[in-house]
Image 1: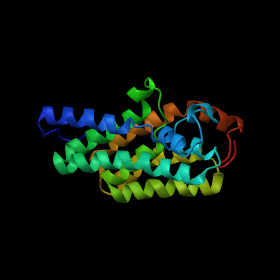
Image 2: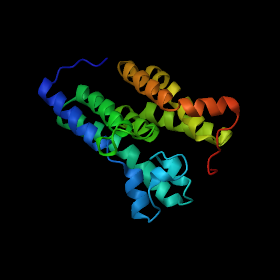
Image 3: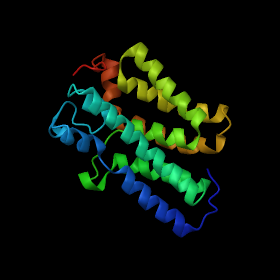
Length: 201
């Protein structure tokens, strides 16, 4: 747990602004901008980059991935620069919650993987890059996006601990637990051998 030394009002303001930034549904914005329709009616209905890829538009999927990761990272970097290290962790949590439960979409958001990785890179870039590499390696081997996300999330607290950021491990465990919860249906399909491969419907 971080030592909360900043003024409570600043931490509360950080939480609100980070949540609002995190709640921007870039998947919906991008698919509409590309003329691909309502993402919630495509594929799994999820608003993340993996579902955008199911439209067949790789640039749109990449843009969604970068923006979803970037909003988490931007929230963390701004909070650290303007308030402090404790606010950076508050921003990471609330930008992630914003993506999962966006007020603009009736609190029905995405699964948070890109935003999670973006916040992690901004909080502690060596551990963040290790988590991204974990995702990429698992994806290359399994060709299953959800499995890659689960492995990366599970190992994120480990990477933080071994790379010298143990004070952030509690936050990473909390975020990873939410990633797993959001992937409960995917976990069932992985166990059944029916989870779609990357690039497949």
